[in-house]
Length: 395
Image (cartoon, rainbow, N blue to C red; front, side, top):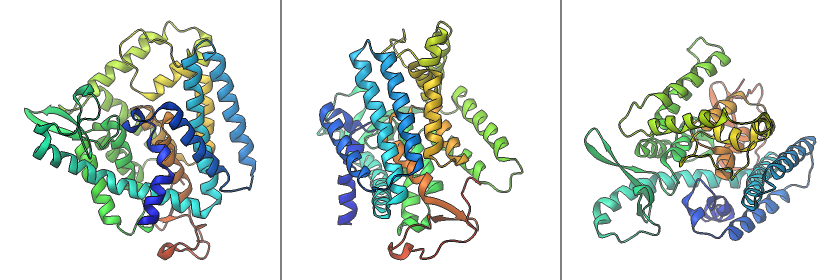
């Protein structure tokens, strides 16, 4: 347990970036210095260079040059460009070291497993604390924006559902929708072989997902059941089309009283109101990160936000970047686009931690998910010999 807690400390810089509210507690220079230090240690985790390194470096440089060219008239835009590119560098450095350094791979897995053993527990404790002591207002580190209620264990958002008052619990994430995505993915793609308390982990993430009261959690559960089902006679791409339709329909139907789908639909509509006045050059390379929308709300979906800010060309670069980082796994693109249709994941270091783990760790053999057979000297999860005839989940 002590070593696992050390891993939390090692990856602490990730927790001081969105989607965590801890980002508001640290000065920018502290957060940037910490993430650069982490990137440095990840890079020196392996001294071996591979052909893919050149592809990643070229893509990141091309993205950064394009960002600076579009945002050169705005200091805030340049700072934001640098911060976003730093996130991509972190994703790349984490991916390469996880591929080639078994010890670091174990650190990343332990960090993620422990995080999502603690986070659901804190979500439950937040509700208990508020029910018992909330009326005394003993804990309120931030202003109560968006009617958020703060406890020592996380944040609550009161909502009225069918005439009943409920409290959406989502740890210290910025919004429930962010956390619900991680919960749903954890339930389906965290294998028993990497967690000696697997049953607790899975149950805790189910309870945590329910407590977010986020429509995305339920939609994603249905989607992942559908994608992983072998009894449905659709091709992979036919399933993807149906998945995209399901997610889009969920945006249009405010099927639960506590859902914010109607607001998200309104904000997505703002994108189409703005894009019709966009020039061809702006559509290709974006308007910049501090270009005023003309409305008091953003576009909600990361897909539309990124097309507006960075343009189609840069977004294609990001897609190619993700293509190589995911090792060309088809199911990774499903998760990527679901996330992009509901929030803006590619600017979040913690999202890239999950993507790197899914890309480099999980395999399927005889309908059972196994850990990457390259891991050696790892307790009872040891796979001493190469696994014959294994296949990727996406195959």
